Amino acid sequence: MVSKIKSGKSLTGALNYNENKVRDGKAELIQAEGYYKDLPDLNFYDKLLRLTDLAARNERTTTNAVHISLNFANGEQFDTDLLQEIIKEYMAGIGFEGQPFLAYRHHDAGHPHVHIVTTNIQKNGERISLHLLGRNQSEQARKAIEIKYKLVKAEDQKKQPERLKLKVAEYGKTETKRAITNIVREIIQTYKFTSIPELNAVLGQFNITADRGSKDSRMFAKNGLVYWITDGRGNKMGVPIKASSIYGKPTLKKLEENFRLNEALRKPLRENLRQTIDQVMRKPLTRQAFQEALKQKRIQVIFRQNEEGRIYGITFVDHENKAVFNGSALGKAYSAAVLTDRLSPSKETSPVPKDSHRLPQASQNGPDNFYPGNGTGENLLDILFQDEQEDLAALNKFKKRKKRKGLNL
Image 1 (cartoon, rainbow, N blue to C red):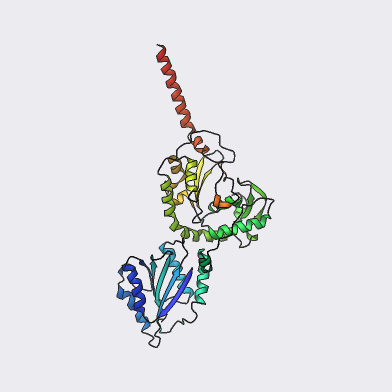
Image 2: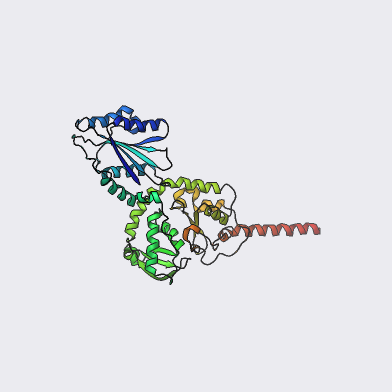
């Protein structure tokens, strides 16, 4: 997030700049903090007089208009509630907590950004110093917000370096704790997930799994968490590493804080994922073709199934936007049951592999080449439709027998 603070002597000019953008359809007022009317009820003079009334309380200070812009990286999307929260935290961080301000979301640039109009004169007439505000308080505030909300850092927006390229963990080839630490840390920092299973949907691509233990175990009762290296099909290898011993301490308690935040951060991405799924479902697809079509759009589809091969859930990993959704989180129409009914059965029937309920073998290049295997292919749909296929075969056999009898008469 890049923040820019400009000060001036004209509150009217700063307000007019943003209001003209609104009139041209290039901006919208999304927040009016410290005002006594709701947003739809505020007219131009309501907005201006609230600020000029404060400015008039200190006639010696002529530089009393503050115009701030917060600029986010391309691809970062926020719903209004989350954006309001970020703005409010930033204003408090620079010492403007309690000051009235107007925040406008602008749509006139390639990157998402907001403009904030306020005054540095407080209700008691005291002036908030603007000296080194941008260098000191603003820098501290934006860095804290970048970490909390997992935003692209200001330093990175200019050079946009590639993030750490992770390699799939291979038991015995790399030191276990180091491999787990590197992968877990990077995934937690970059992906938006709201549960341990959703986290494992991503970690599984790197042969890592987070484990709470069985429900009747002491570890589960104590809210413990360990991380394992797996063989790519979910089979645990070696010894587990305690979450508390990993750098950053990704314990269950800490992850649960991430779950709540990620729920808000991924919300703006939900509708786009729905539309993408709807787009590929416009024509009949088998399960494997459905997975392949979404793979081309960097969306991984994981069908979760039990030991008997029955599908009980579906998870979508959007590697482009770094977000994970269970089908039920997208809506009933995207649940495993509904989507399975919509998919066409495969042409050939083959037995379900013993480990087909596990994640597919991870690619050595991680999620950039995700879901390369066909170990779970279309076989499960054959099983799901097996009864119907057997009934149909019996009916066809009966019709042929009856037809032959008719010809012998």
